[in-house]
Length: 282
Image (cartoon, rainbow, N blue to C red; front, side, top):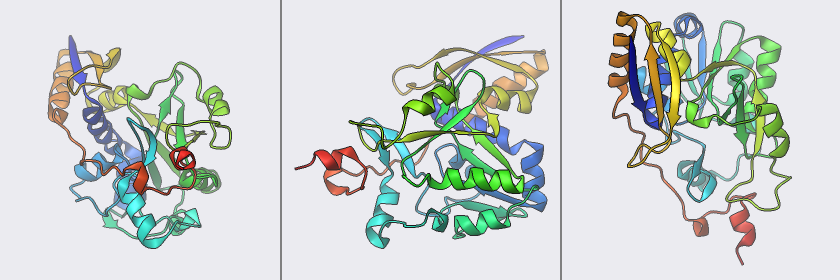
C-alpha cells in the first residue's frame, strides 16, 4: 500500500520529536539516566510530547528569519538584562530530565560533567547531507554549546541525537559546506555570520521517525509549498496496509502543529557584537 502525505515544517518537527521519544536509548535514559535537550523549534515538541510546559523564557536560541541569521528575542532580552554570557559552560537554558523528572536552571558545564554512557543529549541540526550527516550553525566565536557537547560526548561516551527535517537537505557534503562557512570568513552577511560544524550522532528525520513509529518506508518526492506550506515535505509512505494506515494516522496526529510566535527584535534595538547589521549602522 502507498499513501501520499504533506508535512509543514512545524508538523515535521513534531513528527520527528515523536520518533526520538520512541528510541530505546531515549526511553532508557528517561527511565534511569539523564536526558539533556538543547532548546530549539524541533526539541520544543519533545517537551510538548512529554507533557511539559515551556520551562523557561527561552524556547529557541538562534534562528533564520527573513532578514537573515539572528538571535531570538528572548535571548536578546536576557542579554540586555544580565549582560553577555562570557563562559558558554554557564549556559543555563538546557532542558534536563533526570530519571524522568524535569529539572531547569542547570548550567551546561554541570550537565556535561554528570553525563555518562547511559545518557543522551538531544539537539536539532541546521543542515543535512545525502549521507545523513548533520551540521549545526554556530554564531559564537568560541564554538558555542555544541563544541563543548561534542568534546564531552567523545570523552564520556554518551550519545548525541540529532533531530532534523528534510527541508534542511543541502546538495553537498556537510564537510565541504563547513569549510566555506565561518564568522571570521565573511565579508558580508545578512545578520550574524555563522560557522557550520559537523556533528556525529544519530540522525532522525521524518524518514527514520516514520520507520520507528510504523514500520513503513517513507520516500520524499517533493519540497516546498505556498500559503503556509513553505518549507514543507511531501512523502510517499509505503509498506504493508497496516503499516501505511498507521503512517496516515501518525501524520494526521501532527497536522496543525504550531510553534510559539517568535519575538523578533528590530535591528535598531539589537547590539549583538558580531551582527553585520550593527557594523553597517552609522
